[in-house]
Amino acid sequence: MPSQKIKKFLDEQKIKYVSIAHSTAFTAQEVAQSAHVPGRIMAKTVVVDLDCQMAMAVLPADRKIALQDLRDITGSDRVKLATEDAFQKRFPDCETGAMPPFGNLYGMEVYAAESLSQNDEIAFNAGTHTEVIKMGYKDFERLVNPKVVSFTA
Image 1 (cartoon, rainbow, N blue to C red):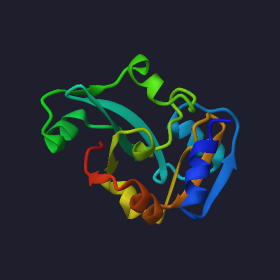
Image 2: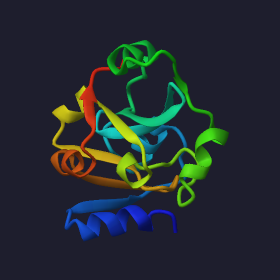
Image 3: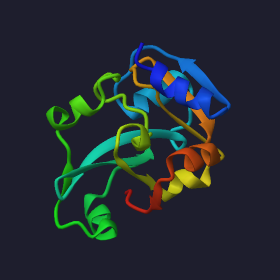
Image 4: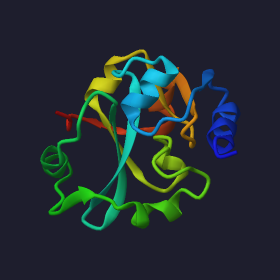
């Protein structure tokens, strides 16, 4: 089961979390509704291409990514959404589009939306389209060490 990698990592780090099973859902807002999690704490992981380097942009389900803002923040010349073909191989243990926001486990830099850092909790796909993990935001920040910036609309 794909979610085992993230659970094993959290268990090894002695992090308290809740696993929430839900009906199959694909968009972050559908996942939030299905798992009964507020959209502001439900994080969606968007893989972006920053000058040919893949990175994760992590933002609330109820927000949209502003690529121009991310370009300005990173100083990249070219910022675009990565194609599924380009990033699928990086996440062999995850269903496409259900990657957890732990770039440190996949060799990717992580940019987290500033608005997520204002919450006590964060929820995210656990590698499947049927399970969410909810945990403390401070624990997420400590484990992932994301660059917390403003890039949402």
